[in-house]
Length: 161
Length: 84
Image (cartoon, rainbow over all chains, first blue to last red; front, side):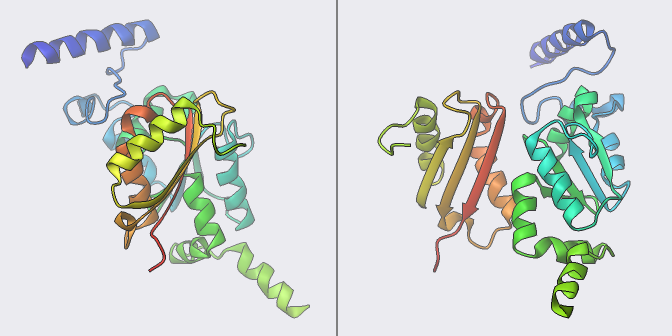
């Protein structure tokens, strides 16, 4: 058991050296690189991610930025939020930070990006957000956060006509 | 696309899903990366999803395919419980 742990660290250290950073070793396997190695406090650690998801009622981890998404699924999330008039939210570009990119997947136990967090709680990715948008759930969830969806006003305008 | 021809990736994923979701009433796997095995769309209808939030249903699929997902670029999941 101890030998296996030491080997893990050696491999990790080599990988970190290759990246030229003294970061903690990353691991793709679920659970590994989790609780035992979080002490480093890097940008992908549980504590760091926890801080990020609580920063704002609406937090998105994506590829690229809202102004320039670099992936179709990330773009879909940005567009859906825009439709609801939600332009003020925290977006984190995981392509800029490999530690965060892996850390957020470990945190939510979800293998893909984008990831949407409402009030610190993981809601889902692009497909789930699209479903919530189509079935009206998103308007409700935003209301719980004190955000009035722009689509409610759009409907009002329709009725006035 | 002809229903008769499935890529190896699609067949393998469908088989894993059938094993992991024995009560599934419908399983459909489509390679949406043009046959490259890089991205898939998965549709599953199963009694096992009843009363679970969408995120939980998708988590179940993620767990079932955790090994295969490591080799993919992307994944789309659509889950539902059969109409009672």
